[in-house]
Image (cartoon, helix red, strand yellow):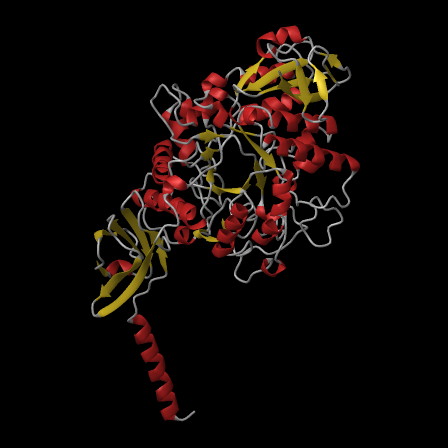
Length: 616
């Protein structure tokens, strides 16, 4: 190389470096866009980039005012607060950033809403949720199994690895879900979890505005929801307020102290959510409950921080509006600061008054679980604003009822006594009820895959008060222990090319699996039109001689459910005990057999739940 060539090369490098240094570095702007016509006129925009805090920011746009430009401890962040007036029109907002003589304009988009917030209709007791884990349900696009830049690769042999399930796999099997009789699907989190291990479950989020590329894209997610709606299915999004993954971009470059809960050394939560309810609990125990971390790789977020609080509320509203969602499931509701949960829920319901949110409260006592449901008159005056809660106490009672012999407080009596505590809840009919889920043992494991017990659990779940949630694979007797989540969250048979067994087509299923699947399908599709189950009152009678009887009824419909919990003997019903609900009825139709029945001569086989529609 000649001296001239060397000089030119050095000059080019210097000029390139100088030019790059003269640019205003903006790496992220969140939310990605927003909408006009929201009830809350204030919008926070997080801007992230190298030394972005050195910028002077201006905005000139009709009916939109820049209220605040806030710098924080980390110069790589700016928080902009805008006031969007009702008269504002959709368009590109020119956010102008200036550092000395250098200027840059970011055109931030305001969009028109597809529909008003009041038009959103959420899940209700008329629905049955199908809970599925995207990574473990079906692999519809093998091209996204392994993606460069993602820390954990594809390994279907690893129980805690990535198995390749994705949004396309779910879309491919929506007809199965619909035909089974489910009316809504709840997906475990689909946002990016770019963690080096155990990232399959979705609860260690590394980007709150991006679907994990191994599942698909944001647009794929939006289209999946649209396809669900076209098939008459609702979609419930799983959201996380309490923690994120330690590989999240803002954890690697924290905006300020107080963004997460920090300790001199790693400190884990005590996981005792009852301390929040306990009037005698120490401040030490209550504080550790909500500020301790879930795990070393999941930093605990501090929702008391004004900027983070606004960021997370807007994020959830953004996804509802962007994807046209039908509901939210709030992960670990008791673990974030409870005051923030109330603020968060009210902000969402302010925008979407008909929306439903179910909070996860993993506790076996109704007195504790009910504390977290909206409308509960708690001694301390707290009201979470969250309309629905997960009914873990009932789940444990259903399992106990079926697995135990009847006694004073065991078997059917356990279920009776649990339901007898419904006065604890502000709205027991709004509880999400289940027999198993992605965190606790599958009932097939608890029942040793006994087909009679599996059918009993299905019948109870689909006739008791509340909003049923059904775990994928339970309909074909899939088992999985609660102490090994990797196995509990096993792959749905038939979701992968080459699977010998296919739950979607019944190929390779045993006769018992097909029987249970068909039984579940029949009950689910009957329930769709059973108004007494959707909106009826609930009355039950004390268990007697291994029989537990309850009624669901409206002014025009009555359903009688008879549980014979005896393991061996058929039981004849003494209908005189139930005269206050049977008065005026002469005949009954067995929902499962379609046979007519004489109310004066009803017999129920051992370990069976019989469901009768009563006729006058």
